[in-house]
Image (cartoon, rainbow, N blue to C red; front, side, top):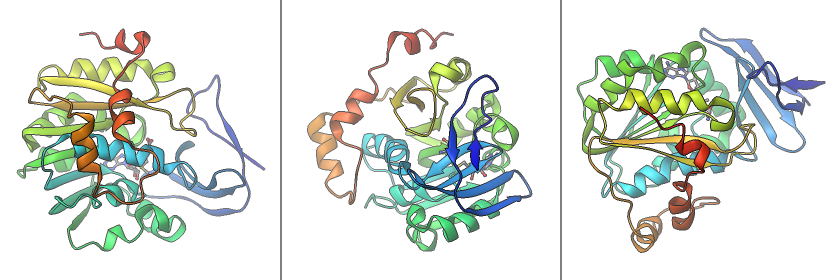
Length: 279
Ligand code: SAM
């Protein structure tokens, strides 16, 4: 049996689908978890690959340690989405973190990932610094009055429940929720296949953020080339030096992808991605 990803009608990746561990329609999306000989356990939502045991470290380390090591002292963090717990696990590695609010729309994703991907959260959902909120991230941010040093939007693609997390109103709410030098990072699609997501985000950010940029990370099971991660702030953010990033990384255990050199290099964008960053 094979799992055919359905993100693109004209092209896509497929996996040998070994044992299916869970498959059901939740209140919000179609959730399937299956075994694959190469990638271990694999999760998909609405036919789109979300995470695998084998390559999750690439995406989660780069979505977290780039903003968290850039901010001088991130204490209060907001995660939107991220139901598998990988982002939360990496955020809690930072000794400066005093509180994390995570807003995930689908309780079933959290429950099934705790059961079938225990190493993703690695106990993070039991951390006393966590406030887990089961809600739509857009609704949460619209009614939010807290301030955060870092906001990480680990969402699905802009289809289904994730669509609202790519709209201007959500970004306006994130700007209001960030401290003056706070940093927003977003899952922003694979530019070679979803270039409009870079352009749309770049344009929608113009009214709210002085710093508007992207960095790239090649995640093996996010098909079609390197993934773009949006990086924004109301402040003008200078990238810390390699030495500074090295010092800030010393407290971070069990890294398998992130290095200060990779951090710097990820912001070196190819011409076709720069050409997508137009107002
Ligand atoms: N790393 C994956 C990627 O790049 O596509 C994302 C993985 S994570 C599982 C995506 C999470 O976003 C899911 O748990 C999903 O339930 C959640 N999500 C989707 N729409 C949401 C919304 N409007 N508010 C909060 N969480 C949402």
